[in-house]
Image: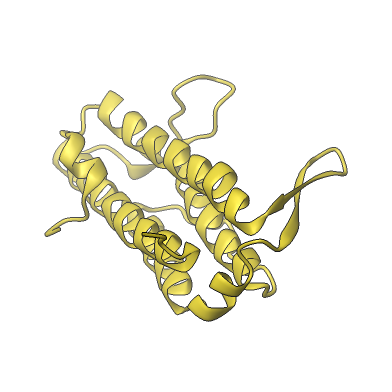
Length: 171
């Protein structure tokens, strides 16, 4: 059985961004209970050369929205990186998921073997088919940045488990 690329990205978006929203809600609740400012968590980095929590969430969301746009052959969406609260980051994840869900499944599925050029820095681009881009670029970036956000919160005492990472709340 072959699963169309639209089904793969839409399912991953719903599951992972839904779970990310739940993880962020637990972070917000923990900050409130501990009487700590949210920015203590939002600006935390696991290592000095890694992005803070807020940027990890933004990149996870951008991985999917830009991925859906490239797969569908549409203009890349612009979501400014302005979030300064847990609630704003949760909203971003919800908006990103809504964008992916609204993307044309037909357009994505028709472009499975279309070659796209992905900017990799330094003015260089990496050509790959849409199917390879989804499996080898979009998903690894989504999961890396979502797991890093999870790990930042867990490191800071937020009670999280594997189920929080794998399933949206109520899922």
